[in-house]
Length: 163
Image (spheres, one colour):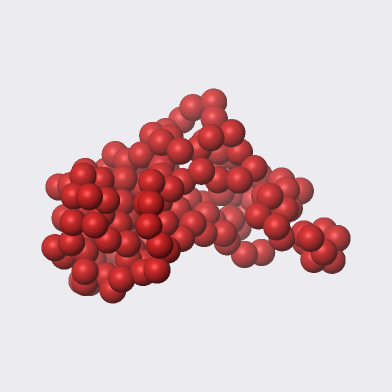
């Protein structure tokens, strides 16, 4: 089992080439491994959305995704990033900032961003709704559903890896 990740927020119009995280300290437009600033108007952080596996207690599949934050919360998160002392911050409101394959449109789902201590990426909690991703992140998915998600991303596990 492996996680899947999004290299950038879907709103980012430029290259997926990362600048160093330190660039986010005063940049008006940048993409780093953990931060994204779009024209000094939109602020994003890289997060993880955990989806539990049904029938496998304690096991989950993760999507590496991006969420918006307000400028104020983005600055708090960025300023405390290197210390790893973020476990007491948040949760903060955000907008889910990626479209995930295998789901109806996931862009701009309401979410809560939960910073974690020890330089762990924040985890995302989707607002309860009827959206399939929100339901699956809450209730879990079967192993068969996980294989469907992998297949949507071009990973054919069930047939020996043939695409």
